[in-house]
Length: 364
Image (cartoon, rainbow, N blue to C red; front, side, top):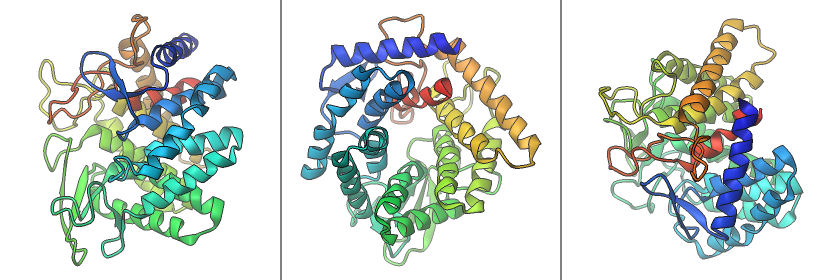
């Protein structure tokens, strides 16, 4: 089953590269991507797939295809094209950092360090957060953080390892700590976003942007939390981050539906036609793999068994019910992902981050 899925993924990625040379995928409805310029927050996932494909099979077609995008990502940084958001890590960890890790290309390393500097500009020291969206004086978003940002922190931790500049580590560490304090609720569920007073840093309230309602648990946000806190522990060895990742994972597992692929929010009323989010389950699979690796030497066999069983159930369901192996012309790998259900934006389609996330569990 896994070999068939990987083979299909490689074929579909090659088809996309050949069919859309030099272009990058954007999310639209219609079971396809809109191919365009590097001006959204998601383009890094596409190059990340290429690097994973190259690492898996050593086919230089994927390596050369990924390398061809580096100049594009460098130019975007130099011109600061649509970068007034926190997703610099999503863009550059999966492009420039990935290229440096695989090839040792110094130019890629320099691009990644410049990206880390760009992310540092979003640090708001009076609050202790990396601002999610907009400019610093934005009346709505000036004091707002988001759980997704945990996946941007590895860019800063990597930059610290490369330069020993303490700023990178301290900003990433402080943002992770405040995320743990304010985004994670006592029962292991999570807020999507949290608001602070821009002037004095006082906490105001939890909220959502893409979830069902402010107090609900958006499943993709929960998935980012599982994966993000596990990665924060990998870089810092701060035990609370590992414990938080485990709590988020257990909540996610306890609320998985019968077919083991989640709906778009854990608190949304489930009716006929309620959208799923296969990408949230794929991201969680990555987080569970991370947890299993990080806890390999622990004696807590009950938690490991829970995570192993949930990972197996999730992956089997994604492959058997959600993969596009029977759709040879599909541009994505997973059906029934959701982008922004509340905003009526692609509530049932291919999500490039789900397509990328599924590679890690498939390839092991």
